[in-house]
Image (cartoon, rainbow, N blue to C red; front, side, top):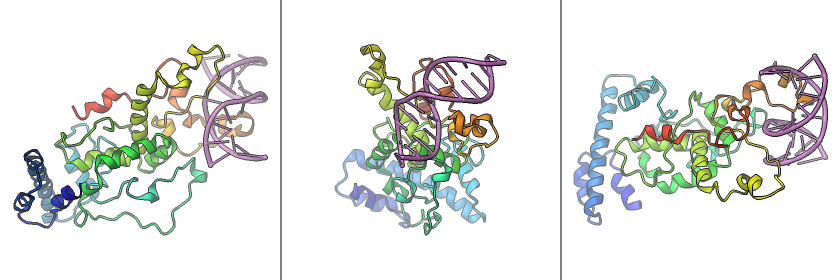
Length: 289
DNA sequence: AGGTACGTCTAC
DNA sequence: GTAGACGTACCT
């Protein structure tokens, strides 16, 4: 991977193809992939140059320019992955930036991070691909399985309005000819979605093995297990109690979460759907196929 | 131990 | 059907 990274760090190299061709340890397949990648990079570099040459380059413009032609449903300033494309433009992912990995239970328990500088634009210095290997994606996905609330928090912080699909079940990114950083960012930068889809994926895989799912069927003593919020529905993404609903007002006696934060999945009767399968994976992968 | 919140029961 | 109260699982 280090060889690959060094080969791909070509931001300031005028003749990248020449640089790549001098990598004598590349197989034919790898070389062609790199050349394809380089062509892609040239395309996106041309976007950058266009905006650079035409003055200001607002963040929304960057996002719209990159996402809209690829995904028609993308809104201005909002990628279809609910990704702000910050990775593409330099923000480090949670996997890279440990300051973004802490679990937030709710607002009152979420503390600020003094001394943490705001993310800066640094694409010109750091090739974003160097941080986006599957080796990075997988541990993060696993980690986020246990961090739905963190994901919800981050989703709200980023003003995410829709759940997104991720690709964590896709073993490799090489087959996707979109800007790799954009797609990878979806998973890396939307822990809620990562948690949702990876969780769902693992859940489907583990359904037969999960004692919780078998408890009622296999034993005569069905231990009542509380369901957990999905973490991705609109109420779950909401972080702040309204303070005025009956649940908020009767916090002490009601023992209920704010009505506006009550998970949509939990409102349904248990068993009415596959529990804790918040994201339709078909919908998720429709972005890619 | 204490807080949060899901599940259930009951009253309306 | 809805709202409130309560038991208690789950988490820190």
